[in-house]
Image (cartoon, rainbow, N blue to C red; front, side, top):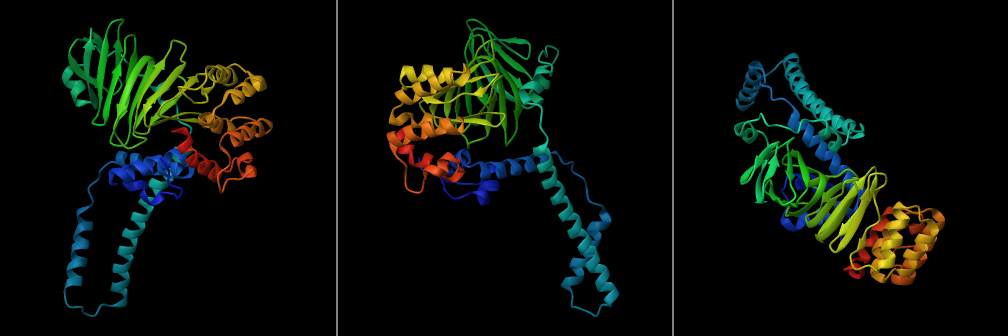
Length: 390
C-alpha cells in the first residue's frame, strides 16, 4: 500500500475526467489522500470544471466564422503581395481572438479560485432549507430531474413524501425515510449502492459526473462504492465522509453524533480543516461540537479506546493521553500518528517517544522534523508504517 512520494499535478485533469487506467487512478487517488498540496490543486481543477459546466452556450456571430473561413481560404492560395496595413489588420483580428480566448481561460481560473476562497454554506445546511415534501410532484417530473433508483427491501419506505413498497426514483432534493421494520437500497448512479437500515433518513444533495453527494440525517447506512476516490460524499451533522473507493458503515444518532466503520479501502472524515483518515478495519467517531475524533483499529485494546474517547470529547487531558500511550501496540501507531497533529508541543514529545519505542524512526525522518509537523516527513513515515498497520 505504498503511496506516491512525487506529486501528481500533471495527472489530475485526466483523473477528474476518468481518463487514467484503473491502476493509475487508484494510485493517484491514494496520493490525494495523503498530499494536501495535490488535493488543493485537484479541488481547483474540479471547481473550474464545475464553473465551465455552468457557462451558457452561445452561438458565435456569423460574420466571425465568415472572416475565419476567408482567412483560411486566403492562406491556401498562392501567396500574393499584401500591404503592411492589410497584414496588420489581419494580425490584429487574430490577436483579438487569442486575447479573448486567454481572457476566458483567466475568468474560469480566477472564478474557480474566488469561489474556493468564499466560505460556502455547508451543503447539509442548505438542504435543510429546501422543501423535502414533494407529494404534488408527479413520477414524470421526478424522472426528468437527476435521480437515483431506489428499492424497498422490507416494508414500506417514503420517497419525497410518497409511500413506496417496490421500486422508484430518489431525485435531487428529495428524502428517503425508512420506518421501524423497513429497509431500502439506493443505486448510487453507476458507481455502487447504499443500503438504508430501519429508522433512517437520507437526502440526495447532488449527482453529477464529478460529484455524488448524500446527506445522512439519522440512522444507519452501508455503502459499497467502486469508483475513483473523492467522487462519493456523505454529509452528516458532525462531519463529511469522503469515499476513497471502499465499503463502510456510517451511523448517525439523534444528537447528530456519527460513527464510521470501514470494511474495505479508505474513508476520509473532514470538518473545518480537521481530518481523519480511516482505513479498512478502523473506526472513528465524530461529534457536532468537535468534528472527527481520532481513528483507531477495531481490535484496539478496550482501555485505549475508552481513554481516546475521553481525550477527544470529554477533556480528558494528560491523564487520558497517558492511558492511550500506555496501552498502544505497534499497530496502534496509526492512532498515535494522528495524535501527533492534534496535541500541543509538550504532549507531542510524549507521543513521539512512544511511537519511536513501538516502531522506530525510518530513514529520512527526523525527530525535529516530526515535532515541527513537517508534511513530507509525516507523509513518509505514514508510508513506511503501512506494513505495520496492515
